[in-house]
Length: 291
Image (tube, rainbow, N blue to C red):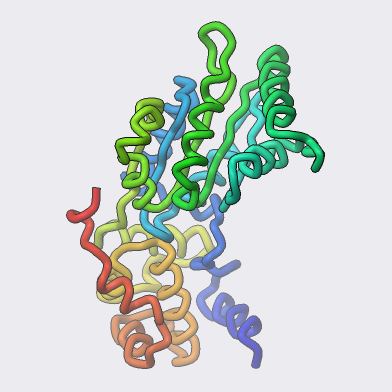
């Protein structure tokens, strides 16, 4: 029996219409924990106030990309969005990434001055047409100091008192450390909306599991309270790891012909060593040690 058919059968076994704990970011499954609500509120605040730079950081798998997808679904038609993930390269290449994200041509023979002039004209034309331009950088912790400084220069393009460009930077906690460097003070001063997304506590993990089961057409009772508590202990509340462990738990429960996931089910996964992220989670810093 293939893994795909096993997953399909486990959804039938538990009366679900889809997998509740897929690792693929899905806004339909977004659980609005207090921290996620505050993070999204800060994203909206940055947009409404036309903040030059909005910064959202969080641990790997904390749900940052899912928040971005939800934001994209909520934007009006008068907003032009360029999404850039894992941008790399030198000064000229970053500008090419930006233009490509905005569906603008980037001739190979064009100089940096030519490309910058094209970018500036694009921003002015969109502004004249009553549209806003937003650049979203996912995995922004990979941007170099030089790239961040170039982005700051982009935000200097304006018309009278109005900003022509807004930046949203989303990345892992080390991005905040980079921005705090003395030579990036001017960049930091342009950040007027910022939030650090921490991991979930035990009660939130229990509510998160119940929410995703319900969205998938099932019952929150599929996971016992003890099982949810063990999931939190093994994952330290990182949503992506919670999804991974819960998905495995449902496969194990199905294989054991159980109607629910118990703490013993989760323990069996740990004992079998199939949850490889468990060790890394156990050695992650506690929430109160993060910003």
